[in-house]
Figure 1 (cartoon, rainbow, N blue to C red):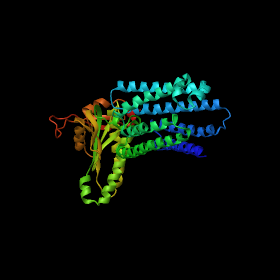
Figure 2 (figure 1 turned 90 degrees about the vertical axis):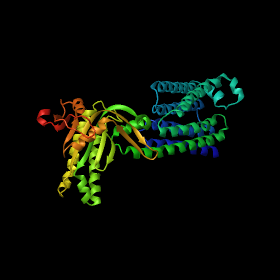
Figure 3 (figure 1 turned 30 degrees about the vertical axis):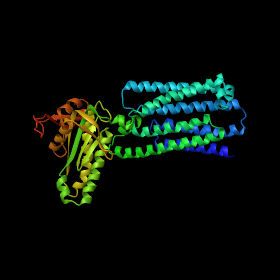
Figure 4 (figure 1 turned 120 degrees about the vertical axis):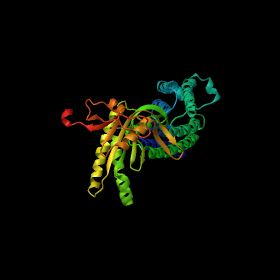
Amino acid sequence: MTEPIAYLTVGLFAVGMAVSFLLADPRSPTSRPLAVLFALLGVTFAMNIPANAGVLLSRPAWIRVFSMLEAGILVSSFEWILRIARTEVGPAAERTTGERLLRVAQGLAIVYGLAGVLLPGVRIASWNSGWSWSSLRDPGFHLFAIPFWASLAVAGIRVLALLRTEIDPTEWVRLNGLFLATPFWCLGLVVPVAWKPVGFAIGETLFLIGAIRYHVLQGRRGQFLSRFVSPQLTRLVQERGLTSIMQRSRIELSVVACDLRGFTSFAETAAPEDVMRLLEEYYAAVGDAVGRFGGSITSFAGDGMVALVGAPVAAPDHAERAVSMALGIRDRTIQVLHGWRKIGLDVGVGLGIASGFVTVGVIGGSERLEYTAIGPPVNLAARLCGRAAAGQILADARTAGAAGDGGHPFAFEKLEPVELKGLARPVAVFAVTERPAAELG
């Protein structure tokens, strides 16, 4: 009974890994095919128990089912690699070529599975009987060996290429685990039956080490991403990887800056716990508004905040969203501050909006990362924010022109040009106002 127990143990372990991958990372497009891969592996190992015990009623029928399962294992594993490759940073042509290679590998895997379904007798006599030098003279052996090993070779070429490129760091860890585990999984084709579970168990263990490391890195990434309140960002990182989303690039977007009026004098006289509670309520209000309009917070500094609309998630209507987001921040913050005014605190919020081209990307060391934007719009938004009165939203001319007045619940009132620190010439400024409901109808 040693052999059936070994097969059952390894099979259950594989199914358990499949369930854990799916539950731990259900939205990840790479974890789904990986879960399918290990689920099929578990079922395949469980099928070896009655087969080796000789209790199957129809061996050709068993071979047909087994062949489909093996083909499914190969196809899902290549699909997993293909989705990892989509996180690669590099020319699109290289990614397209790599994807075609993996599609060829999947096609060869399907040919391998169909051969077993259509010719179960040949598979029993030539492929399942075990490998030997005499097998090379058997045409039936090559009918299965060629598509099987060719699919692995083609996929292996792509894996080796990926290991030398810049892909999502967490996926790189799991891909390394696959690279180390695959030789042990393939041992089942050449070692005695009793040793197949041992080889596969070693492979599972090696891959599990990489999978654990993957989830540790994902946890650290989650802490980093928690600074961004945009759900769209999280989804894109899951689909394309952190590296490809946050590489440095020059793009057009809108910047919203805000801070509290009267906060400094309040912080100098209030109890520290009151200051912290006000900031917590303020941050929550700002975060809620930023998240609703697809923005990304780049920094909180005391009572100041800077958010981007249009990066890392592209938004063609970034100016319109930024204005709506600023109105949302103002309204939510006013609600929070209303309760504090009841106890005599006179605090307000001012906001500035500017649009234009900036360079965005991740900066920092190994222990701390910051997603930030650098460019004139960032400085201009901060200057406008500093100039805004409590409850006022000031925007630059580019934002007003891009957002427009037509059909929106907001309008722009042109003010006199103002001189701002660090800018050589006066700047055209617009105050954002809300349209009456009658005008919108």
